[in-house]
Amino acid sequence: MTGYAVAGIAVLLALATVLWYRRRTARTIARLDRMLTAAMDDRFSEADFDESRLSALESRMARYLAASSLSARQVQAQKNQLSSWISDISHQTKTPLANVLLYTQLLAEQPLSAQGQDCVRAIAAQAEKLQALIQALVKTSRLENGILAVHPQAGEIAPVVERAAAQYAPRAAAKGLTLTVEPIAGTAVFDVKWTEEALCNLLDNAVKYTPPGGTVRVTVQSFASFAAVSVQDTGPGIPEGEQAQVFARFHRAPETYQQDGVGIGLYLTRQIAALQGGYVRLQSAPGKGSTFSLYLPRETGKCDETVTFSKAP
View 1: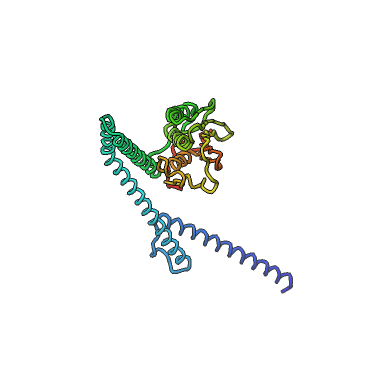
View 2 (view 1 turned 120 degrees about the horizontal axis):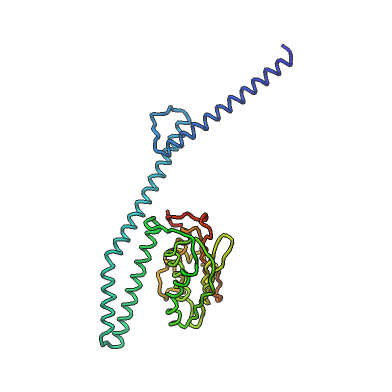
C-alpha cells in the first residue's frame, strides 16, 4: 500500500471520527434537553431511564428543580396567607377605627379643658395615622400579589397632575408653602387612578418635609420615550448614602421620626411606576431640597396594557 493510500485512509478515519463525535454530542445535547424539559414539566420518572451518567445527571436535575418549585410554592403560599391576613385585619378594624374617629369628633365638640382638647386631638391624629397605615398595607399587599392590576392607557398628563396638586394645595397653604404647577402639556401611557396615587405620595412627602415659607413645584417634561412628572421641594434634602433606602418599605430616616407617616409611600410609588413600565428618579443633596421624578412611558409598546406585580424587588 502506497503512502498516499495510507494518508487517504487516515484522513477518512479522522473525518469519520469527527462525524461520530459530532453526532454523539448532538444526541447527548438532545437528550439533556429532553431531560430538562421533562424535569421542568414534572414528568421525570426514575424508572424511565438507565443507570448511565446522563440518567444520574437528570435525577440530580429533577431533584433540584423539584426543590426549587416547592420553595417557590411555599413562598407564594406565605405571601397569599399574609395578604389574606392583611385583608382580614383591614376588614375587622375598619368599623372600630371609624367609630373612634366619629366619637373623637363628637368629643371635640363638647366643652373640654385645654388639656382635654389636646388629648382629643392626639387621639384623632393617632387614629388617622393607623387608618392610613392599614390602607397603605392593603394597597401594597394587593399590588404585590396581583389582586389589583394597573391598566395603562394613552392620555393627557395634565388632568391627573392637576387633581393631585389640588388635593395638597390647602395643606400647603395652611403650612405657609407656595405650591405651583407649571404649564402642562404632553401625553403618556399610564393608569389614571394609580398614577394619581403615586403623585399624591410624592406631593405628600414634599409638603410634609418642606419647612414653612418654602416652595413645592410640579413640572412635566416630555422626552423621546418617557414623560417625567417632577415634584421639587426646598426641604432639607437627602444625603446620597440614604437615597436608595428611601424607597424601602417602612424606611424612616432618623431625622424624620417626629414627622407623620409610616414610610411606605415612596415604596408604593416606585412599584406603581414599575408596573406601568416606568421608574422613579431622585435628585437631592443636604440643604438643597429634593426632586422626585416619575417617568411614564410615552408609547404603548413600552408597557403591557395589563401588568401585574409578581414580587417585591
